[in-house]
Structures are given as C-alpha cells and as structure tokens.
Amino acid sequence: MSLKQKEEITIWAFKDGKKGHEKQIEALIYEFSTRTKVQVVEIDCSTNFKNWPQNFKDYPDILIGAGNKTHHFMLQVKDHLKSPKTIVLMRPSFKPTQLFDFAIVPDMDKYIFYTPKNVLWTKGVLCKHYDKKPISGTGIIVIGGRSRHYSFSKKLISYQLKMILEKFPDIHWKVTTSPRSPNFDIPKNDGNAEFFNWKNVQKDWLSNEMSTSEYTIVTPDSVSSVYEALSTNSKTIVFQLNLHQNQHGQVKTKVTKNIDKLKKSQEIGYVDVVRKGVFGSMEDIKINLPKKSVPLKESKRVVDLLMDAM
Image (cartoon, rainbow, N blue to C red):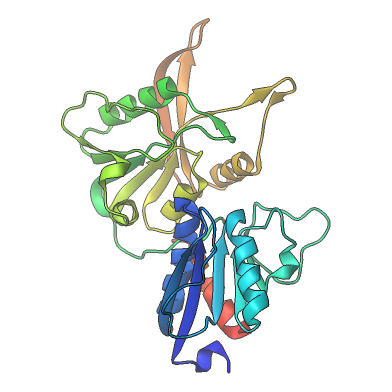
C-alpha cells in the first residue's frame, strides 16, 4: 500500500539534539501532516540509542534522521524491521548514501564522483515555509557566533548592530542570540530595539518572528537561519563577517560560497562596512537590499516527490 492510500502514517524521528537538524526534521514531518494523519515517535540519539521506543502502537512507515549520530540507529531499525522507508537529511559523512531509501541533500553538498540515484536535491537546507504578510516597520536580528565558516568578531558585529539601530530608528527591532553567541550587550538606542536571549524564548518564537517581520538580518555563519528567513516573505539580509585565514589566504567553504552566490543573485541583501584611513577604521555601513522574491517552499516540494515515490 502506498503512502497516499494510507489514512495514517507512523514516522520515527531520529534526533541528535542539534537545533538546526531537528528543525529540518520537523519541517518535513509538518509537510507530511498537511497531507494525511501522522503519528510521530521521537528517538533521542544525542547520547546513545539503546532501547526501542516503548508503548508504540504501530510499526513505522518512515524513519527520518538528520546528523551523523542518527544514521547507524536508523539503519539498525531498518535492518530489523525491513519495511520502513529511510529518509536521511543532508549528505551522510560516514555511511554510503545508497544505504538509505532517500537522501534529501542541500545543493551546496556536492558529491565528488557521481550522485546516487536516491538523492533529492534541495535549494539550501529544509525549512518550514510561511506565507504570512510581514508587518511593516518591524525587523528581527539574529546574532550567531564562532563557526568553521567565518571568523566571528564581536567588535565588527556590535558596530554593524549599533549603526543599524541608529540609521533605522522608525523600525522596531527585536535582537536575539543563539547557542553559539558570545556574551552580547545591545547597544544604546532610542527605544527602537528589544533584546531577547535565546534561552528565554519559546521553541517557535524565532520562526514566528521571521515570518511576520519586514526585515530579517542574520549573521552568515548560520546557514539554517538564512534559509529559514528565505522561506518567509521577510527581506533577508546578512551581516558582514570576515573569512578565516590560513597560510594560503582566505578560506572558503561550501557555506561561504553559497552565501556569496545568494548575494550575487540578490536573493539576500548584505551589510557592507565602510572603512577609512590607514588603519581601516570603521566609519559607516551600507545596506544592499535584496530583490523581492517568493518564499522558498522546498519542504513542500520534497514531500510531494516522496509521496509519489512511496
């Protein structure tokens, strides 16, 4: 029996405790739930998956996992039960992609020699999409932190944040941090900004704020936040951060190349810091706005393909 013929499907969601990974899983499950009744069993793989889920009514139809920690346990269950379809999100690093039934892979994760037939490409990482109309005069600012993609500078980000609040006093800004953020103080402002610590907000707070804000400004180290913003009607803008350096010069990664590509296509806007003088003192900022575009709906497109295939 195909999934389209089932009145209810059971999904086992294998989670590794990483917020970005779990959001991708939740986006996919949400899209399944818009088509049929869904029963979800969550399995924590962040430490070790030793015990089978207790008191579940039905065997799973689908196993979904994101992150290398989940892959072994997904395949273990698949080997034992045989029938469920496995869906892995992002390109596996330590397991052959062909071991899974489907691999949902962002277009920045290239295969070197050939692409397995079970790969479904997506534009960026999977996100829940929103069609809400933004509230004029509102903006959400998301501060990330250290990453292997960009050299995070608290001084550089603080300056850009200060200038944004000064240059756009008529916009009500909400500023929030992330688990990777350093201790961060909001600059003095004319009452047009509120600060929210990521530890003190509800689970879906940021997604809801992005979906209703006219502007979303994020640090480019968080590719999941960038694509989450692109899946709304908000104008997406990234802060300026410098690339890491090694003995050969600037270090470019798949993420930094992808951000550059989005800038060039004007799908995202970006902040330019204007420097002057011998020592390159920061004097001003210039904000390059993105072109108006429709929200990405990659999770919807992918589930349409999966429903046809299963």
